[in-house]
Length: 434
Image (cartoon, rainbow, N blue to C red; front, top):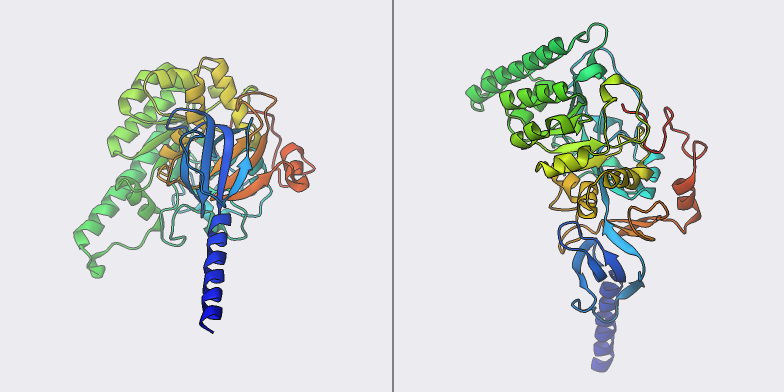
């Protein structure tokens, strides 16, 4: 009887070891771009329970016996791409009743089953900042999420509290997008004035809350829009500001200096003209790179060199899709265009990964291949910036969410409008500026 019990115990222990081992996977032989550290020519990456537990050269990393080994010799592994400005996951729309709408949460409009997430995964995008539209001075709260396969948007979020948590930034805009018929402002000067008035209203609201010191009888009436602005004033929520022209960029920097909010400049088509001012303000830039400019005169001076000029000036730079403007499957290509204008390969990797993660303040979890970070990574067929390279696999939290060898996934990698019925309007490879 004792022998029988002992045998069962050994078998159970052995089974638990097998389960633990099969949950551990080693990817062996690939060129690994880590983003934060030097590239590893012949590397090993080991993942377990959705995390990276080891990464290094094949000579230096000890591979435990009994684990699953994936031969990726001749392939390239790099961190999952971070898209710092996108409009996927929802149907296109524009609410015209007010030029400032800080209470709107784009989170409440996200459909996790939207076909555009398939496109993002096919393009290697694992994390994304989804924005409300740019037709307002303040169009609402953005959301930072992973492009995971799920039926519940809460499973995709970086924040823990889907009801009361701060799950993203705040989208603002200036220039021609927000200059419209009443109630919108008709000039650039009026646009800035409307924004200032709103922030000073938020300061007054914040002061009343502080003075109440927890006494509910003294608190001002609840205002969920002003609550979001107070979060900005407290440095808890980042402003993502759509702006193209050099003079509009400087207007944003003046507002930032006046109210002290955390800021990411979005698009900055003429950022190269005021690179020193941006660098002095220590403000990061999320740049759009397109090969078919059009749609608005304020972006007519867009140049491929913008990313390099800003990097050389000491600015933290990312490159985004603004999908539907650039199809999410072509984010690599946009970085390649910046390389064509002089951006180094090392910086090109960073503008697609770790720099964007820093802008969204999610770099403690993703954006680079490092021990302890989420297992968000891509397997490519070759050089990341070659026209002939394909994203073969996309992994999020250690789960394979896109595989080009899968017939359904392949369809989303190469398909057109017949595959993406939710398309709101046309696009090109790196298309018209929004």
